[in-house]
Amino acid sequence: MVTSSHGSRKGTRYKLRKKKRDKGKIAIRKLVQEFKKGDSVIIKPEPSIQKGMPHKRFFWKKGKVTDKRGKSYVIELRTGKKVISSPVHLKGVE
Image 1 (cartoon, helix red, strand yellow):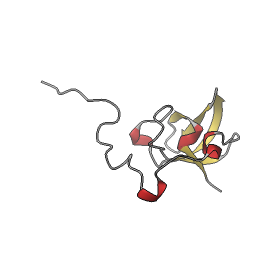
Image 2: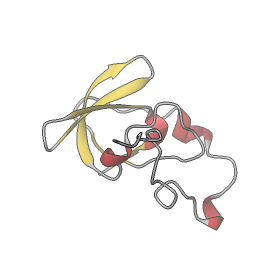
Image 3: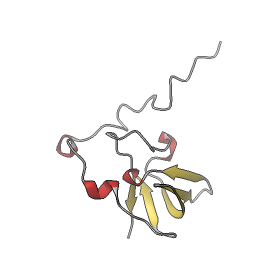
């Protein structure tokens, strides 16, 4: 028989771990950061906030912001896939 998947965070013990110096409260500016259409971003997960976190296969991928849905952003990756993510899980690229 086929085993069950055990959820979307299965196998992320090391992917979703913070370094010792990064532990603690996150900066408010990360929660309220704004992006414009066409901005380049990297999907960088914030482990302490699970809401709005994209699937683990999209971690550390680069893409462009194409739309805003409520507080979240739609990011189009280089492969053509679209990912919806909260701004706390995004990092701007200059």
